[in-house]
Structure formats: structure tokens, C-alpha cells
Amino acid sequence: MADYQVRLINSATSLDCTITVPGDRYILEIAIESGIRLPSGCGQGECSACVAKLLSGEVDQNEQKFLRPSELAAGYAVTCVAYPLSDCTLQTHQEQVLYPSSLYVSPPKAQPD
Ligand code: FES
Image (cartoon, rainbow, N blue to C red):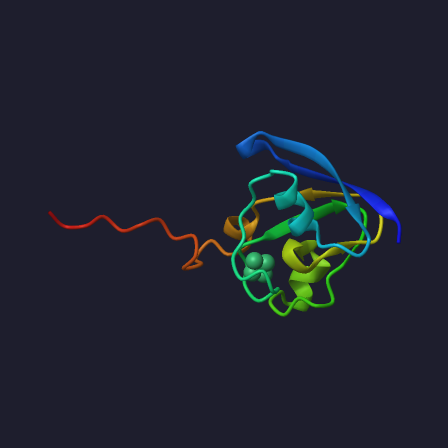
């Protein structure tokens, strides 16, 4: 199985790291093992916590169960169940971009005194 260079970027968090990911390992799993702090949740492709946008390259995310076809076509990827198929670049922290009204990312409501 080939290894691929996966670049993870996000200007808001000053993230720009390239990791080597074997083609039979999940991108998020290797990122976490490499000490990169990324959003994660279910770890099974069933939520939107780990969503990134694929800027270049290809991934296999056939195990994901959350993204709609239109979101997949737009390049969004669920990194917890995404295997690289080539060297690729992913823009991380895309849940808030994809789902601005998501309960996962709503800011905490102010509590009355
Ligand atoms: S952490 Fe839930 S889909 Fe990746």
C-alpha cells in the first residue's frame, strides 16, 4: 500500500502541516497520532465534526454516512473515514462553513444571572 503526503491547512488556526498517510489508514487517525489537534466526534463518518474540504487530490470516503451527494461533489470530506488515494491538500475545520446552524457549533447561549 502506498504512502501519500497529506497537507492539512487552515489559516484561522495557523495550521499548515504535511503528514505521511498510508493508503490504508484514515487521515484523521494519522493526524491525531502526529499530534495535530483537529475537530473530531463520532469517528465513524456519521457526524460533521471532522469535515474538511479537499482542495487537491483524491480520497476514498465510501464509509462515510453523513455528507450529501452535493456536499461530496463540492469537495467536502469526512476525514475520520477518509483514506488518501493520492497526495492531497485538505482545508480543515469546515463544519462551521458547511453547517452554520449546526447544534454542534452554535455558540453557548448566555445564561441569565
Ligand atoms: S468525527 Fe464524526 S464523521 Fe468524523
